[in-house]
Length: 114
Image (cartoon, rainbow, N blue to C red; front, side):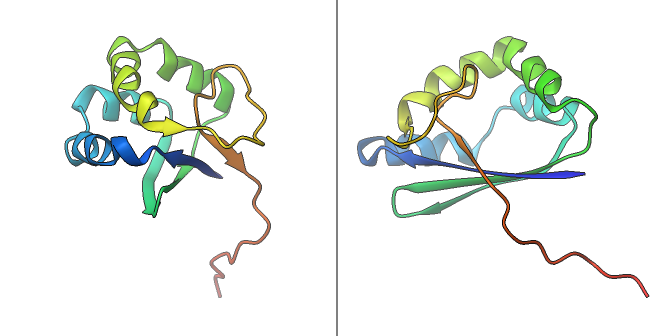
């Protein structure tokens, strides 16, 4: 399992639109995320900062993310959500990553079994 955290900015003028969309995420979008071996996906909000977190349980994250990008309903969802977000100015824009920037994991407290 791989943990992934990402960050982007929420455009203040799009705040209510973005929050309304996420109160009722489309079932097809959720299904595409699940089909890509992504679990425990959360988006947190602090001011105008969005932080996403998910756990990846597959073998090829790039291929699974490409599968999400091929989903027509997800692409339609992104036409609504992407304009609400703004990539960090200092972030490297990688093709296909949208406005989200991956964050490096610097520490993790794992479960210990006795």
